[in-house]
Image 1 (tube, rainbow, N blue to C red):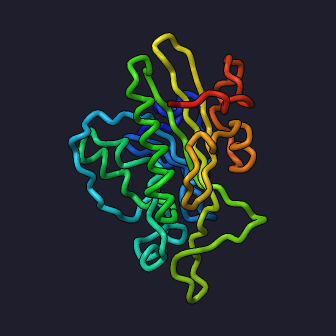
Image 2: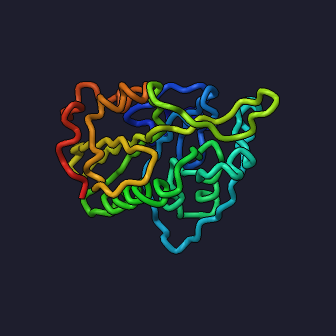
Length: 237
């Protein structure tokens, strides 16, 4: 197995997590406490738009059973199994697409958020990556919990079984490198609900994401000429 810090995805940083899941086409940091990923890190590279998504949702048996999400946890919950690494970002081969359907890559999302603003942002990032001058597009995303607000749960709750908390919001941070080696960064915080607001409404400084998500993003950029406080000033489309 590849060591996480040797992977291309981790070139600009690898946040901490209870369990680092090294997949063939993305790297994921899993939280035992929340029974879902703390973050998922990828290089966006949708090379074959003709490949159909497989929809083969399944548990990730690399995770200890007591911390692992299962298909039954989502049944009747009213929440979607929301991708962190999007299926449409991994469509070069069936194997590549299939691993995005591991439940370790899922987080409970409200249906109109999953099919609305979250999907819209995923699509915008793929369009950004398709621009001729963009050489690499790195994306890290994950759940956010506001502990001064109610946090719902899904899953079996009889016999004191652990449930899965539903995130109040999600973050996504995008880092691009162009053909001249110039880096640009955009970070977003989107509430886990339907919204009619434009995507750029949710742009925030990367430092804010780090504070509320509790992880360090792109920490290997120390000393680089990129302003983490002002990372929200440029639109991505």
